[in-house]
Image 1: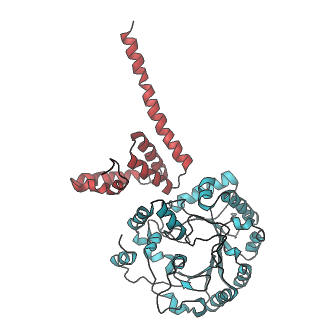
Image 2 (image 1 turned 180 degrees about the horizontal axis):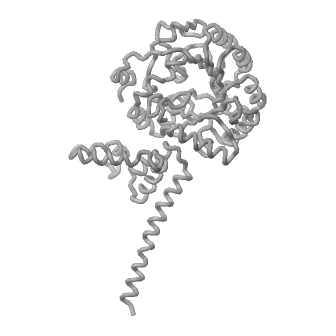
Length: 110
Length: 321
């Protein structure tokens, strides 16, 4: 193994079911149910997944949901906006913790 | 990867045969004013292959003799063939449904600007290439400037009545992916194309067909150079959908090459994979009863027609697509 992340490992995902296969089956049934068309379209869900993939910084998920977004008919403008949504939520989550800084400073300083 | 023919046999289709010959798909030549990066024929402006007058006349004779209901003219750019208008005029006198696969930009080339009216006058149904409603993917796939020229061609077709709701002149668009991925579901993509082309450019069309990029020809070269070939083929094979098999286009059409040779489809033509041995091999010895239920010559590229929702010159093969 030359890298921790190998592109071909994505296709080996089902090997996770080698031990405790019933748990993997529960996961896959849930996964497939969630990602199927419902109140949101498959295309919308793929864009959400792409944004989340950036937020959790999973290279497998970014690969998979870039392809899934294209295969659902999305374009680079839409995929880029999804990335920015992830970025501003992460950024906002960082900044909102600044209130704790303010609170702490207020509490311990004269 | 399991060879395609073995995969079919495993699933209960040991000897796939044609069901009928409803359509004669005629490839008028590999010359084209575009050089698309996905083209399975590697068509382009410098290709010399063009169907000659003798084969053109043989096509007309076959359609008349055997009452072939649908004739589908393709290329290359079929309009470049010097006998194209003669063929359309002769076929339009027969009781056939006539389709032309048009790359759109040819309609802006000198000597071809009259074609929208010509198509209208001969009641030709058009299937036009437009892989997306934005410039970047179209120009990357089909060449710089193609998107804006395609829009202008579509406006000209709309102006003579093509694609308008109240018109009988049918204008369909053909989508294919701008790279190594599968086409989106056809219905929702058609809705997006309708909304976006109307909103952005006031362009109307009838239906959108999705077509998968076949892993042969120029597209195969791209897949290999970009190290995408194995994964793409793996995806096609893994996506095999048994529900597509009965509707495969090779079961309903026969393809004629620019030389007058017969093939199960245009992709087999690109691969020089002839009809099964013992069958008529050219338009000059076309025999409908013999060809209607012929065994099909299959290869691993056939996974391209059976993956996911299926793929054909008439779009996806299953309802969901």
